[in-house]
Length: 416
Ligand SMILES: Cc1cc2nc3c(=O)[nH]c(=O)nc-3n(C[C@H](O)[C@H](O)[C@H](O)COP(=O)(O)OP(=O)(O)OC[C@H]3O[C@@H](n4cnc5c(N)ncnc54)[C@H](O)[C@@H]3O)c2cc1C
Image 1 (cartoon, rainbow, N blue to C red):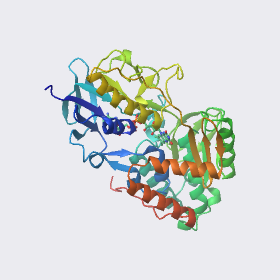
Image 2: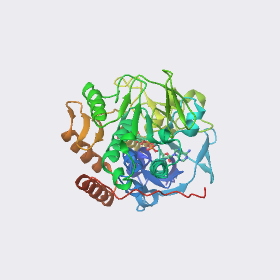
Image 3: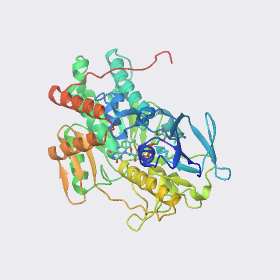
Image 4: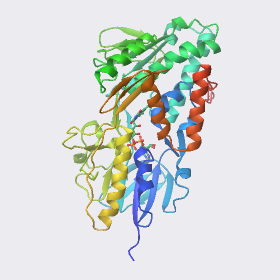
């Protein structure tokens, strides 16, 4: 009997874990390589950054997820390069050979070539980033309490990019400003604290419906967030933020949520790469120009009649491409006809704060409390383990009733 094929999967994000979970164990050996030892539930990073939930409740160790899968080996390593001629990848723990390679490495923040913003801005792409923001914000208030100079820069929290991440962060900061931080820092005058959201285009939540755009802006403004649309950021030196309209904002806190760029590897043929660094794939998620390299999720650029400019870079696309590919690889191996991927858009949503969310279903647009309950329910359903669902539910209920959380830990090694 022919030995099993080796499938190397790079990335244990939404695409990577769903692909492996559905792959036939009898036909394939899997090596999963990720530089982080856990799967991260990115949609709730902003709640970690604002001390509303613990990082552990949205982080799932990869070894635990696959503990019952005898065909899966896990390697904690960073992948640097691929050689599509020799079917090998180079990693921080050595070389691996593959029969089939599945790239699912997601995205990084895009600073559009501005090195100083890259150097000084905070981002929200990993659990570590979320903890860094939490540490930074709490340290800011410790500095304000200690009457350290440059108060204006300390009191201005600036978020750039009013997509779901920026909007959710701004709303969450506005809530902890009102309900939580004054309890910890009773001597600070929180009316001085400004939460500023800057967006280059005309609207907040620009990819959503008109109702979502106008309601999200109105909610944020009502919560005291300064929203500047049609404003571009031109530079930041860690202290002063320069805007394209010539204005300057003094700030020690710039959170960059203004764009993403797909992760890539040395050795990927340049002709595979298209806009946003994504890799061109056919309807089977196969890199165009290869017969054994597949690309999933945020990294994949697939044109279809319904999505002529590629799919949105969201969890639902990553999960469903992954499920489809797992079935297709088996079909291809058994000589059966694979099924082309078709995205079924189930909707988009964002939460702005307590009782405030917007939901765009294909057939219905909602805002307010009902939208907020739907948002919570669907996010709870997506969380991986029952235990974590419970922990988050308890945290949310406690926060709703008490208007407080007890998670404001600064977890950083000061010696560094
Ligand atoms: C803050 C935030 C909020 C979001 N909110 C939502 C939301 O509400 N709804 C929604 O649908 N989508 C949301 N998204 C988008 C969604 O998370 C992504 O579309 C989804 O994670 C893409 O899945 P993926 O598997 O392609 O990549 P990811 O889930 O990003 O996984 C990539 C994996 O690859 C690993 N990796 C990367 N490079 C290497 C390397 N060189 N070597 C080894 N490992 C590597 C990473 O460590 C990571 O584990 C959000 C994203 C962010 C950042």
